[in-house]
Length: 282
Image 1: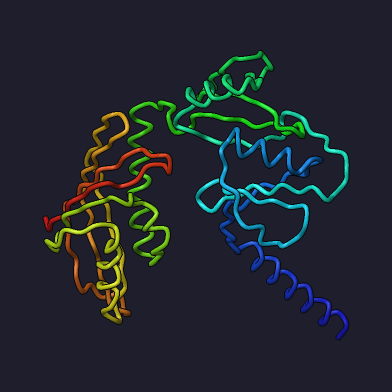
Image 2: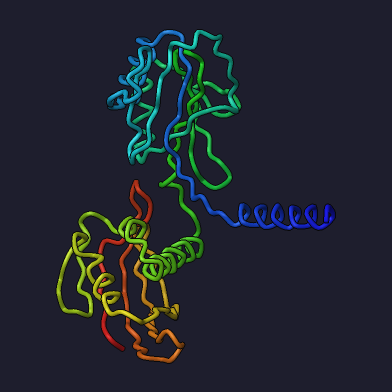
């Protein structure tokens, strides 16, 4: 009996381990926190140099100030720990800007020193992937990398593959009914002419998904046929076919229809976003 109990416990532990391994947490970056010695000096630095907007310190603790990094990302400055701040260049905060040249001029006007990764003063370096970068330190010695990540120029084929991956993500979000991720693909000023003949913008971009899933007892799937992507610098036009497939709970084919689609993508500070599109039955 004792051996049987041990065996059962081993089986339960194995199942729990497998279940834990199957969890997908989908983490996203929330904030960076710096321990600082002089809170007011650090606040002044990030306001003047990076022109960050101070936001509410929702921890409500003394000796802490919060700043927005955009896109719901934050920088927290914490002054009450009281320990010696020790860092090296490998530990750094990195931010991207489309106006790197203007920011370098801004640093020169403020007479703030900056360097490349090797430490050469007043130098802008370029990584192997084409991204330009500089480094500087805040009043506590923290290293900050500033780069032009979105303006680096990848090869045309790389851009085409990147955009096609986004189109595949588009349909994955539709199938998973992930409206939040789906909406993030679209520029705020998007305008489109879909197969419904109702011209609209981003505000109504998920209406068609809600409508097609309103019919119960049907299972949705799709097939994509990649046609062509045409790259014009920061603009990419994509043409492809998408076949919508509907089956019953028993796997019986209920409907299969193919659409011709075109999307126009633009590279922005938020990444590649759809700014226009059309669709029609094939």
